[in-house]
Length: 368
Ligand code: NAD
Image 1: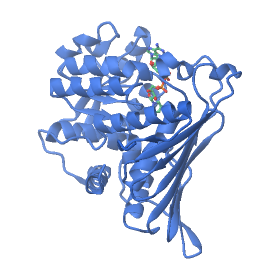
Image 2: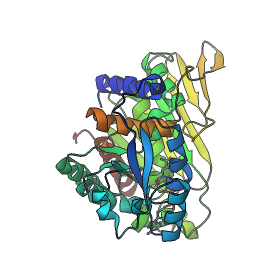
Image 3: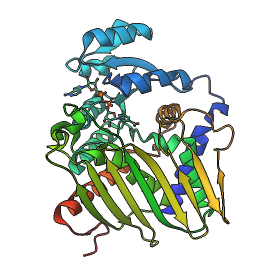
């Protein structure tokens, strides 16, 4: 992505983050979201966030567990006709309360539910990773385009005040010219039976789940697209958790400016860190991309000081994300993290895996 577009995105995100101050037109009723998948994220994190939204509301739930769906609907005052199973999902087309479908399912199910939602005439918010392959991402983009519907990826960090401030500082040269980025994300995955460790459902291991934060940070902090990647995987295949997917994976991205990003993800330690090293200072975030409690420092001239996002940064990152798509649907604008952005990441992820497998640098700019 070129710098001009990045800066545009940054200012759009800043507007979104502060949009609680923007008066809502009388006709601007909050748009209705259907949450597909009432798991840890859909039910535990996203649904409570509608309380912080201005332009979005919960309008329906879709779940394989009828009793859970009914209970959640009742708790949120939804009528019975706004409760769907995976089998009845397509009839959501007849529900005028639903404008947007939010796919919070295991990664390999994202393509199916995005395509079905688009065919039902709904706009789509899809969780990260967008899908499990480049081809699936392309299918999702094509389906939404054919239906004339928006597609956005749940890249909440583009609405997170510390990350927005770090991007602004990096762009305005607070640390000089950014020469090197480090980003590590991981957590201890203890249960060998979870879908995240099954290739068919997850599409990969820590890279698909947490590594995408490291990759995203390297891209949105530098505002550049990598031209080459070199990766190395370290997985103990005797560990029952890692018979199908990777544990530790490290990769180096080379950017056109000469900046380098050393990224990593793992399922065997907790880490959440982004460091931007410039020729005049450093910007560090740790934790960097959590739901809350992130911290940031600027090191310069031999001193280190804590940086807070500007006052009035507004909504939570989740509400900012949910309202952004609603506002894009209203205005016709493209989401700042559209399907194309998810596809860009998936192309790089495919190259990271290929580089680790083949033990060589993979060019991303078409050069030999
Ligand atoms: P989860 O396991 O807690 O929930 C998954 C949901 O999918 C459950 O309701 C489950 O019943 C349903 N499901 C349907 N078919 C299933 C199947 N065959 N196997 C397993 N579950 C099935 O997972 P989660 O943590 O809520 O993750 C869901 C999606 O959200 C993933 O794509 C994940 O990457 C993403 N996510 C994003 C963030 C973020 O910060 N943006 C955080 C967590 C998860």
